[in-house]
Amino acid sequence: MAVLPIARMGHPVLRHPAEAVADPTAPEIRQLVADMWETMVAARGRGIAAPQVYVPKRVVIFHAPLTEDADRFDLSAQPLTVLINPVITFLTDETALDWEGCLSVPGLRGVVPRVTRLRYEGLGLDGAPFAREATGFHARVVQHECDHLDGWLYPQRMTDLSTLGYVDALPAAAAAADD
Ligand code: NI
Image 1 (cartoon, protein in one colour):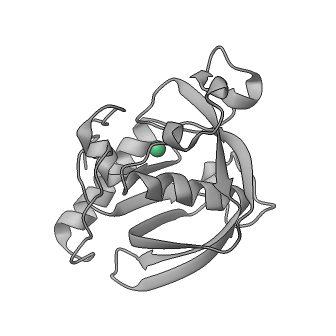
Image 2 (cartoon, protein in one colour):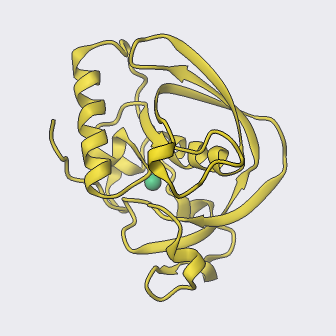
Image 3 (cartoon, helix red, strand yellow):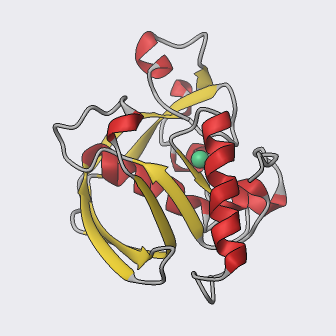
């Protein structure tokens, strides 16, 4: 495994749609996911998408609380999800606002509107399809990570850029948000 360099906002790899993975069980995908995991842990992130490590493939990994009552900040209590070739279906028009950060936008946080309920499906590392419904913060994490596969970073989703700021200058609520 290896800690990989992380692409930062402005690099074209973050702006272009990523390619579908032909064979999720291929050794190079297993290696990619292992390297993404090590990179995410080293950077203290909650999730990471393959384009963030300069690999334009539709692979994301993340820790998210799978139930509303789970502790949002205790990553060790949240399973690691590996999601390949994801497809999201929104189940509501309702959105909610919350702080987000991103390993590709280091040092900054901003308030982002996200849809509050969705279904996502994709393939795991074993090539088997799976699907989940997600609400709240779980749904937010899925949207943030999958946006990376289509060339979107969270600042592009913001509707009030006055909330974009440096984490050490923003209110404490922003500091509590994850990368
Ligand atoms: Ni991100």
